[in-house]
Image 1 (cartoon, one colour):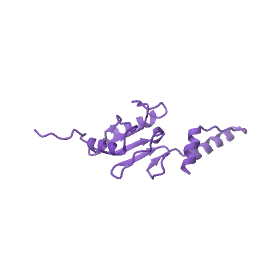
Image 2: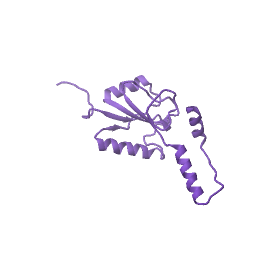
Image 3: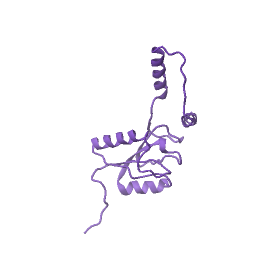
Image 4: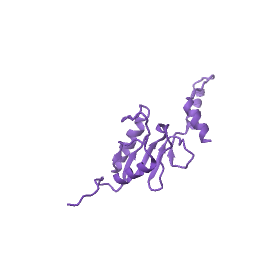
Length: 149
């Protein structure tokens, strides 16, 4: 009897890769819709999505070996959960970040168009007759947006 890898039948396994120092198995409430959307789309396309990994405290070299052993060829990195390390990067694995990349290294990423969102909101408020419009931004957003420029 030959021993072989126990991998998925798919030719491309995917992984959701947060870096959470608290080791939560469930994402924070505001990140949950992103994970659910990724799971739904992966299932729709017939790709398994591994959600058991956590990059916190694991070196990129170790993660690369884990991905190779599990047949993972694509990863989704919720950047908003990468507050303790730089996002994993590899030439061998397709990767995309969700949110602004806290690292200067180039990476494919999807993020909201905050400028468009704010101007749309202000336009709607002005159209409703409001004239004294305030704006409040979270400190984390300011730090990340300043680091990006």
